Image (cartoon, rainbow, N blue to C red; front, top):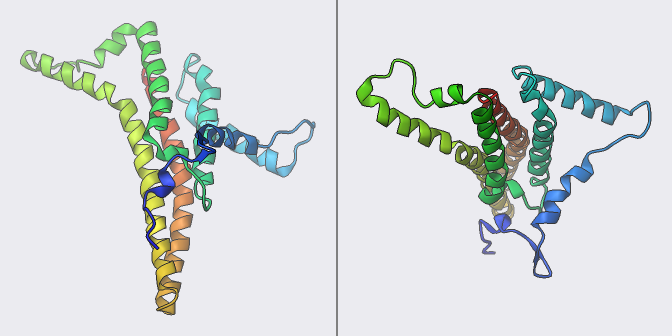
Length: 226
């Protein structure tokens, strides 16, 4: 069976219409909410994790930066649930699309940078020229610092896309090898299947870690500009 290695990364369609929007809107439906005064264990654990994550990311921020807490917590929950749902069989992972990751990274990065230029423009401009720079190197350093600032959202998006895509490709290759060897060499199949299980556990950790890293870097950009 000749299967396209990148078929799982193609945006799905329903009756010729793109279904990516519905898939993106699906993860928030999995977050349970409670209308009662006393919560159950699932919601209590969920609230504890949200408070722990929010506290860890917002500790270094001032009052202005903490206004972004709801957005950052929503961002990490969305990326984490999307990555985890993408590990299910015959599913689609939106975070493997560079366009979607750029659509998340660019507005957040731009909002943080614009806030920095509005609130403390001197400190923002000081990042372009380190203190004590020799005069002949000033034009070159300003250009380098400007480029490094502009590629921050691209680095955010490419990092998330590359890590999630690489894990999915590796799982696809090992899964195909396990299926191909299942009828010829049973001991080798069991070994490869064990590796596949361990890799799946690793990918679950990577899905959560990449969501945390993406949100943490956005939080650091915000901290540098508030």
